[in-house]
Amino acid sequence: MAVIRGLFTLRIDIRTHAKIRKIAGMERRSMTNIIELMLTREIEQYELEHGEIRLTDDDIYGKPDE
Image (tube, rainbow, N blue to C red; front, top):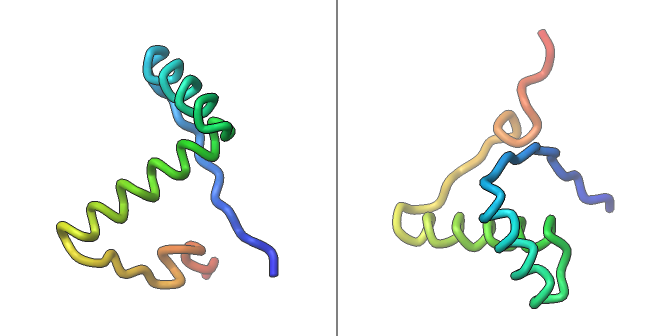
């Protein structure tokens, strides 16, 4: 089964960009992969502190055109 991924443009400070690039290199990962990993970990931590974020199909796929 294919994995559906969302696309998001991210503008970040040049120093943050350089640090992420270094971390990705040290971990032998792509920058995209390391950013996705960091975001996933942050969401998991948020949910531990605040509870599960429940999603509907509309949250994930958007509302169908009417």
